[in-house]
Image (cartoon, rainbow, N blue to C red; front, side):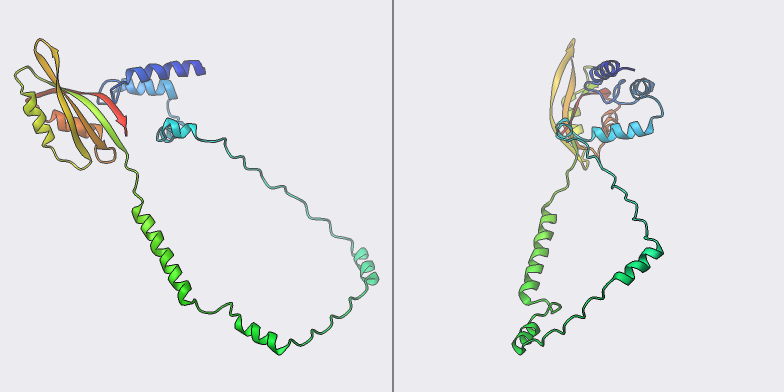
Amino acid sequence: MSLKDVCKKSADLESKLSGKLFLGGAKPSAEDVKAFNDLLGAGHTNLYRWAKNMATYSEGERKAWGAPVKVTAPELRMPAAAAPAAEEKKAEKKATPAPAPKAAAPAAPAAAEEDDDIDLFGETTEEEAAALEAKKKADAEKKKAKKDVIAKSSILFDVKAWDDTVDLEALAQKLHAIQRDGLIWGDYKLVPVAFGVKKLQQLIVIEDDKVSGDDLEDMITGFTDEVQSMDIVAWNKI
């Protein structure tokens, strides 16, 4: 498959997935599997892992990456061949013994006293201990102040009722009464559909590690007497 074909298939999928988690809506299906395999091939584990890792970075972050670092193997050098034994003996005969080193003159008493003042292995002074403790506290404060990056998403979805007898305002209040860690309810509005029928359009913010798309669908469709279906309109990373 050529690069042109890959780009075309990717663009088609991007268009079909607009406002949806999967090609069929909020849940995966065989249609998603076929499109995935058509684009990346079946059983390409390394390619899947690479694509998943790449998708965790934003477009701006990927553009900021530089060229790959090339690692050059160190040059291997063979050790020099040992000289023949005969050559070594000949060199030993010609070698002249080096003169014996002269005895060092005794150090002056004053110099000895100065050396005694230099204690390379002495105990840490109070000033050094205080400076070290201050640095530890500063490092601890920096770590404490550093906040972990929490992945969040902004989601806009539509809720369709069974008929025009369902009180959408009351339904919205029921939804907003749901309290869950990682879920923040935003604004909502009633959007006309046709023949006096309206749908509830709701905006929320979730923490990706705490609330999933399936969790969201279960919460909404749990009101079986009032909710016919729910559809994701937009899902954006924050």
